[in-house]
Image (cartoon, rainbow, N blue to C red; front, side, top):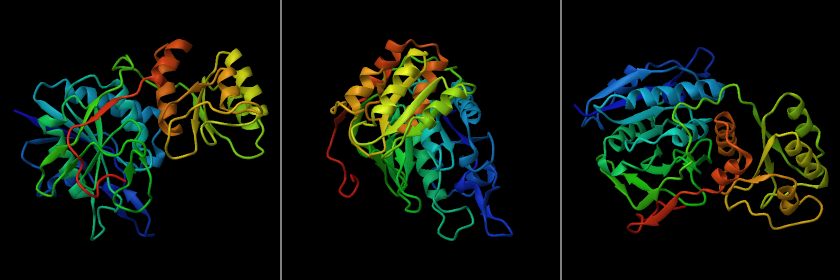
Length: 342
């Protein structure tokens, strides 16, 4: 029997207010699913992985989510998987699962911006839409998707872009790939071919330290040197513009790469490919010459996950460069609905 497996991890979708008014993950997965009045065209099986707000999730918990997704897909009756997750770190967990997901069946991440006990809670609609998507044959071979407010995005490149609006997530470079109507009908307007990283499905990133170092006017290499001293095996630079820093950072990057530490170059700018354009004084050209790896369209949060997975799986420097350079192929099948694209 075709079944959608719903893996619950907590987050706002499962949160209620405590006696002090703070939102705390406390609602069981069974309760989340039992309250649905839509999106139940197929049977649903609930797997409760954890129940915590996602700002407390680290690589160990992400590995567990990835393991549970693989376990759910080992059942031939599973037609798709939904993961409910807090919005703060959903983009990282979804990225890890996508990197290791070679199965054609869909995996859909969702959550909520309003808590379970809010009178206008958006969790039930998001969960129903995610279940409908996971059960849809149209969603096969698209990898991991993120579903919020009736809009579907590919996991790779999608980030949380707003703290309160219901449309919390966006791929600022490519826009959404599809929509879910109020009646649960799923429609895709983009043909998507996933980027192939060759990572094994059982890769585990816990224990692989990768840090993000912010670049800002006048910064020195103190933060970069500090994480290196703490045993970082990889570093992601949250650089300015196209991927620029300064001469001190460029020199520190060279020291890192000579020591065998991989440095990925990303940006604090929301959209646009990271492109080495400027040279002299620590621009992107200088950073790449020092050994930094350009992250393509990936921003620091997801670049960190990819770098950790590549390091954990024993990839060489050249293989890591190639993996970051590999982008998904997209083509418009039909024009997107009005009001969907940013």
